[in-house]
Structure formats: C-alpha cells, structure tokens
Length: 323
Image (cartoon, rainbow, N blue to C red; front, side, top):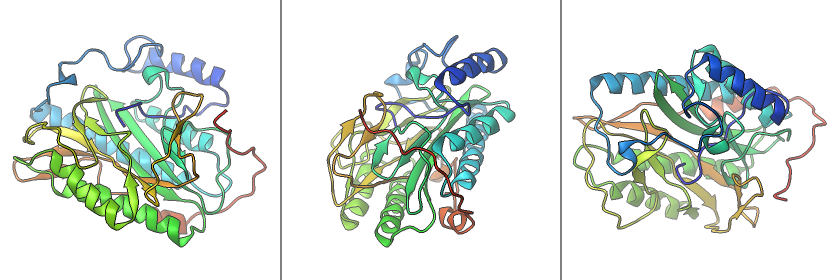
C-alpha cells in the first residue's frame, strides 16, 4: 500500500541481527534504496506524478519480478500453521528471495525493518513480523514485494490458520471478490475510477467497510508511483488506462463496516480499535491492447493450503500491544 509502505521480515532473530544481515546482503545484491537502509523510499522518479507506459523489455522484466513475487507468496503461505510465528514466515520469505538472486523490497524501505508484511486478524495493514505464534482460527495477510533485475513485483494474499470460523472465512472470501472485481474492469480506455466503484459494490454487499487509508499504486523500477489506485468511489480524475501501464489493486475490507483505526508506536502497524477483523488481497496488473494481464496471478489457493497445515504447539509470547 502506498500510504505507508510494505512491512516485511528479514529472517534473523533480533533487530540488531536483521540490521547486520541487511548490510551484508546489500553488498552482494542490488540494493533498491540506493546505498543504505537509512535512505527514505524510492529514488526520485519521473513517475511519481506521470503514469508510465512501459515498453516490451520493461514488461518482460515486470513479468519476471511478478512471477517471483507470486512464487514467494506461496512459500509464505506454505509456512503458515498454528504455532508458527510471523518471524518464521519472514525468515522463509527472506531466504527464498535471496536464494533467487533478488531482494525483498520492503527491507529498509523508509526504514522498514523486515522483508514482508504480516497483518493478523484486526491489523489493517503493515504488520511487522514478530515472535507472536499464530493461533488456530487466525487469519492473516502476507504482503510480498521482490526486487529482481531492477524491477519490483508486488502481491499479497490472505491465509487461514487451522480451523477458521465461518464469519472470518466469509470476510476473507469477500476480500478476494473485491480485488477480483476491481481487476475485472481494467482495460484500455477505462477510467481509473471504475476500479473503486467495482470494489465498493462488493464491500457493500458483504457489509464491509473498504478502507480509504491505503491505495494501490503504479510500480516498475520504482516501488510506488502513479497512478494512485483508489479502492473506493471517488471523483479523482486520473485519466484513462493505456496498454503498458502497470499498477496494483489492493483493497482492504473491514468487517461490520467498521471505520476505526489506530497507529502503533512503531509508526507502521495500523489496527482497528474495536477488534474488527480485516481482509486484503493484492495483484500487480498490466494493461494490454486486449484488456489486462494479471502479472502476479493466479491467486494462491489459500483454502487448499489451510487443509494441509500441520499444527504444532508453541509457548511463544503473544503479539505486542500498540504501546
């Protein structure tokens, strides 16, 4: 999500270890945030305000980065199970991305300390992996972005932990439908506002609030750029979609039309104040001459992965409070 960046994990045991490992990796792999993790965000790009239309070589590079992002997301999903910590998911993601000669885009982005976002239950966005063990009945979003050969690929999916209550499963399914509805309208000559309108219809039907705190975004050699993909009904004229444009569609639905939110002291994690649960899916989309291409598709079969989970006991501590 553009408003605050992605969260991620690095696959080491403490923040000091993560910092050291990040520095070691930076010397061996392309470091997307210039020369050090202290750099804030993307290097200056002309596509912060202007929507880029990519050429054939750029599109092929995007396909490769997005395919790796999708593969990484499945690695994360196969790690999810009762008793597993989000730190362990982060470690699996970090190790897999590095093994493929790529870099986890969130790590060091605007100071973000991890390689992936893990948003559990009532976390709206940008949850930072930690030592909390996942519990039977939890749901979580894992948000992955990889940097491969100079291009970013961005995707996320909900995952089920053990036995999920019917209302939570319905929320997850609604989040998937909302994302699919927003993508379905994409094509050459389509007004960008059509995405928010399509998503809003699904959210209303599911009795959910679609958060307007975060938007989708343009993506390419930059992590975040134009256009801003607003997931709600809006009057912002961004023009029409053209072949060669790439951007993410990533609505966040909150159950019971709940609009509450609070920012944790880590300056990243956004949580509902009422305990209302959330659901988000994300894909990177390419506009083509004929319509659109789902660069990070297909969506992970999260139900099939849940059915294969092997529960394990853990005495690890619970997730920290907002503090």
